[in-house]
Image (cartoon, rainbow, N blue to C red; front, side, top):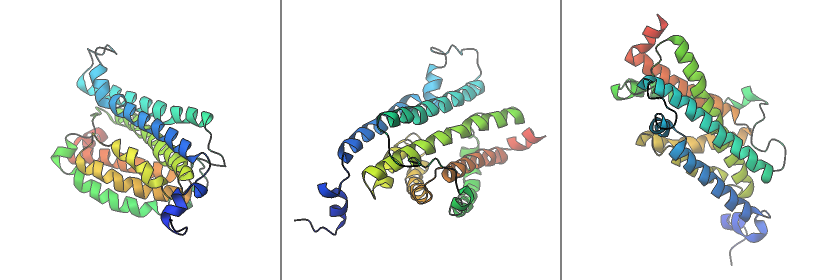
Length: 254
């Protein structure tokens, strides 16, 4: 017999498992896996680039223009797959209780406190990483010809992080935590890490650590918005640092 005071008993014995949790975990897991796969195969810039001419008829667009259109496509696909579809799933299988997915903006300033040290660590690391020619010659994918183009691109680009945080740190995290108490963060980080499988290996490996840390902070604050803000700051800083180290930012500001 399994002792009733250990981890397995608390989380896996039938009498301690929420009613319907097995079916909920199975259906949510299949849904999350399907969304992540569709996103990985069809939701990014590269699938758009393959479809640009045969599907969208953009044979006269320059490579740089295609990169901007690709970001529009990526952000739109993220919003559809990571926000709209989970909202429909919630209508079919609602998660009871107030603020079920951490969407409350209450106490944003107080909840941001543990995120500031993360930014203090990550931004200097990004500055150093962006000084590498391999990085700043590649990022950002779209090379804005004017400052206005940069602002428009970043507005489109940063919107995708609202969708990412809602899906992985909102929908996935809170639903998995409700169905399997104490394990939600670890279940959520699996599809989140797989989302980065096409990224450089250090970035993909780092997504596991980032997912665990952001997941723990989100559960503590019961809000996705500090994570959204942090994710946006890191993404924006990476682009600006890369533009600076390549000399393009100074040209845009002239």
